[in-house]
Image (cartoon, rainbow, N blue to C red; front, side, top):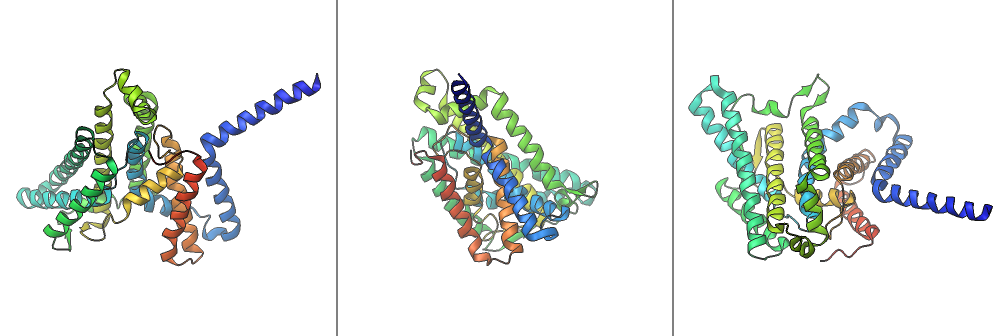
Length: 336
């Protein structure tokens, strides 16, 4: 009798552990790395200002990763976001500067608002263009967004003459270079608010459930009466809007955009954060909370490597290794 009870208890403990590890493994790993780094690096790492710097430096990546999570959960990819960021950023600064000159310094705030609105519209249109070609043209998202990656970057470099644009409107840079209560950088607040919104959408809306359904089994979802093309197009629109919000955050922080360096490698880094956060590359699985911790884990690892004096050229190699490891741990087929 005791053996039977013991067996039942062991089984329940095993199931509980598998559930915790399956859903929250990224959080466990994150906490473990924080503890180890704090012991080995001391106050150099375990410092409030250092953590704020990590959050500030990875807020743009976080915003992009939130959008990428929806795209990948739906069973697709978007490789164009780094180049899209440059194109949207260039148009945003041009429009902001234009209205800044037309309206004058007294209406500089209105010029900034119009620039922000133009960024959101432009990002949404680019996302819609990706989605409509992928769904109606029946072309894999990998191919379409790879093509747009080259188009956006090439056209941006042509119009910017390979250089950059600077914003001339006073106050634009305050969007990202202001600290709430003199402590918390505004980009961190933007990331936190957007993460909360994305979590709500993914867990408590019909659209969120449809995204998971499309990623899990698109054919069955279509047969159940759900417009799968519409769902996929909306995920790309969300991605475009997130790119626009990242543009506003980055261009205001630097007060400029550069045709060659801005957004370079952002698509790979965003995918890395999403995959490390446990989102399945085959679609239909993952959570926004885990993606947030995936972003934080990447930021912490980069910070640790910098403090430890690891050559900057090796950091991306280490991140790439983490992606491969994360995919292997998923124990699922990654090529659809």
